[in-house]
Image 1: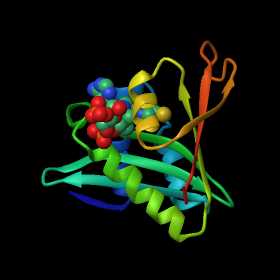
Image 2 (image 1 turned 180 degrees about the horizontal axis):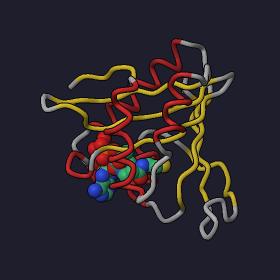
Image 3 (image 1 turned 60 degrees about the horizontal axis):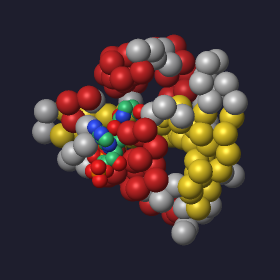
Image 4 (image 1 turned 45 degrees about the vertical axis):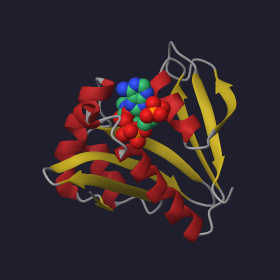
Length: 144
Ligand SMILES: CC(C)(COP(=O)(O)OP(=O)(O)OC[C@H]1O[C@@H](n2cnc3c(N)ncnc32)[C@H](O)[C@@H]1OP(=O)(O)O)[C@@H](O)C(=O)NCCC(=O)NCCS
C-alpha cells in the first residue's frame, strides 16, 4: 500500500472511479485546474500492488474542506479509506490546521458510518444541497 500526491496522469483513473461510485464526475478539466492551478488544492492517491485504488481531494486554507473521496468499489471495506483519511489528518495536523469539514448525502449511510468511525461529528444540515437531497455537514477537530 502506498499513498502519494495525485498527478495529472491519475485524472483518467479518478474520473472512471467517480463515474462508477457517484454516476457523475467532477470532470477532467475541473480536476486538471484543481491539480495544476488551485493553490489551496491537495489531492492524494492510494495504490496497492496492482495500482490505483482510490483518491481524496481537499481544499486547505486556514481550515480544510474535503472535496471528494472514493475507493474503487471492489476495494472498499478493506481499510484503504481509513489509511487515506489518517494520512490526511496527520498532514493537516503537521500543517497546524485545526478543523476538517465535509458534506455528505443524507442517504449515504456507508460514508456517514465511515466518517463517524473516523471521529467526525455532525455539525448541521444543508437543505437541498444536492438539489433533491440534504447534505449533512460533518466536522472534525484535527488535533482532538
Ligand atoms: C466511504 C469510503 C471512502 C470508505 O472507504 P473504505 O476503504 O471502504 O473504508 P474502510 O474499509 O477504511 O472503513 C470501513 C468503515 O467504512 C464503512 N464502510 C465501508 N464500506 C462499507 C460497506 N460496504 N458497507 C457498510 N459500511 C461500509 C464502515 O463504517 C466501515 O467500518 P466497519 O468495517 O467497522 O464496518 C468508501 O466506502 C467509498 O468510496 N464509498 C463510495 C464513495 C463515497 O461515498 N464517498 C464519500 C463521499 S462524501
